[in-house]
Amino acid sequence: MAKGSKSVFFCQSCGYESTKWMGQCPGCGEWNTFVEEIIDTKKPAGARRTKTDAKPVKLSEINMSGERRITTNIEELDRVLGGGVVPGSLTLVGGDPGIGKSTLLLQVCRNLSLNGKKVLYISGEESLSQIKLRAVRIGDFNGNLELLCETNLGVIHEVIKRQKPDIAVIDSIQTMYNEEVSSSPGSVSQVRESTAVLMQIAKGLGISIFIVGHVTKDGNVAGPRVLEHMVDTVLYFEGERHASYRILRGVKNRFGSTNEIGVFEMQHNGLMEVKNPSEYMLEGKPEGASGSIVTCSMEGTRPILIEIQALVAPSNFGIPRRTTAGTDFNRVNLLMAVLEKRAHLNLSASDAYVNIAGGIKMNEPAIDLGILLAIVSSYRDIVISDKVVAFGEVGLSGEVRAVNMADQRVREVKKLGFETVILPAVSMRSIKRESQMKFVPVKNISDAIRFIV
Ligand code: TYD
Ligand code: MG
Image (cartoon, rainbow, N blue to C red; front, top):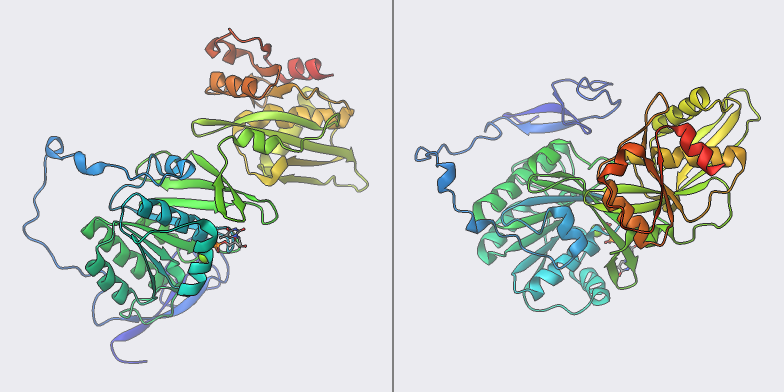
């Protein structure tokens, strides 16, 4: 090894640093995640020029006028960002390969450039002609968008300084490399150093930067979590490979709430916004089938109706099989235990499968009552009317607990033509009762079960 460099091992999952290789990471408990990297020791990493003229500013003296948001004209994205792009912010867009990250960002570039912003799209993955091919499918572009195929961060830094765009896109962080770091692109130290450089560019020059990050098998952005700590906003793009819709979810946001989701559909000419996700999610709902009920989940400020399906069948083996798709496995097991103890259903000899139709992931406690009624409906083989919606959190004593924003949920239920809503009795007082809906307030699961059987 050359003088002035040393070998260090990094955990690819959490960024834990060690001088020797280890089988299990003491930081995150993952196995076989350590890789060796050669570090330059001549110059201590992270050394920065110390400024001596720095002085604190009074909060009241800070000028807010610079904090305008830049709208992307994609409402679903703006909402997840908290109202638009913040100038000088660093946003990470993660997701599986082929989910549509490059497509979304190219559409953002198009809209922003049409709005008169200067945009620079830097790709380390595709050639200019490949980007052009994609762009042709999306629509017409104007002269404000410039493209660069480059992976050397030093060059990128120079180009950004010279061109001074308002927005820059880096596709993807795993292909970028910093000459000062000796390890290969995509390694922990490269990803970390590259992000640090981009952070300086964003904050120093006031340029909003979007970074594309690939996701590993288990759903984390490849490279260490440090990457997530460094950026201002982390968005995940998720969806089933065979379904055409895509969900954009905020995981971290320094400038807004992280509860919001954006819903898109991948079409032949790019990603289209889905402004009425409930209608979209309920498409193809079976009629007259047992084990199915519609519930309402609040995603940020927006209620979304989803169909819950359950299949409960006698088990052929000693230990019953339980599977869930789209919701929390442990939560479903808990609800089944509540059913067994409080409603005296004999589920211990039954296999149970619970699925959120459409492949969307929902974990809000308010969908408990929907899951529970779907299981009862399948177990007893009774059909719940397709005009009924149920929501409410279920507690361990079988009580149905209040949910937030009950009124918004009821309005969405009404808008989509449902007639009856089963809801926690305690949530009734927050509901404006002018509507012609039929309300079934329930205090515990027995009340709810009695209504459907
Ligand atoms: P892409 O944006 O390249 O994904 P990522 O950057 O996340 O890897 O998306 C590629 C997929 O999207 C590919 O399977 C083709 C599909 N696609 C469409 O269906 N319609 C389109 O208009 C575009 C541009 C892509
Ligand atoms: Mg891509």
